[in-house]
Image (tube, rainbow, N blue to C red; front, side, top):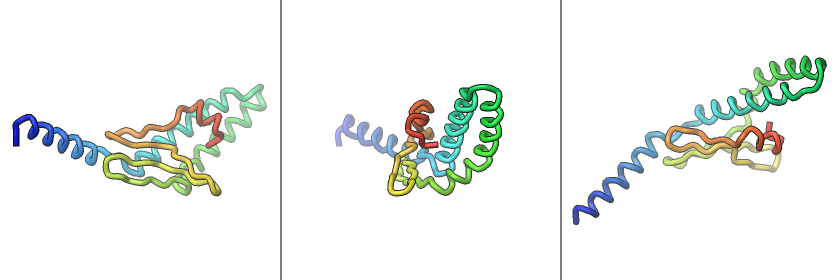
Amino acid sequence: MKTGCMVTVLAAAALVVTLVATCPDRRAHKEALGQLMKEVIDERVESSGGLVGRVLGTIGKMTLEQTGGLAIDQLLTVDDYYVVSVGRVTMGQEHRVVSVGVLGHVFTPDKDDVMKMSLF
């Protein structure tokens, strides 16, 4: 094998090993989605109008933060493809990709997009 070809094969193997070793697990997806849900809830409470809206929003926020982790646990399915992991939520007949994990990081939708989707 030529030296250039050997270097290419070794670089490709190193990349695959790195991707496999850093592929996020279900816990990482759950944490990323929990943080996203917290940000969405915080923004909705902040945008609540008036004192009554803020008080009710704060009560709702506390309730959702306590039960949100349970909802994520029940709804979240993470498929591990060794080099990438994909988090999905099933609600009724609808399946949505809500997170993608690669290289030790879980990517989630922007909180503004989530608010438009009414995912949380």
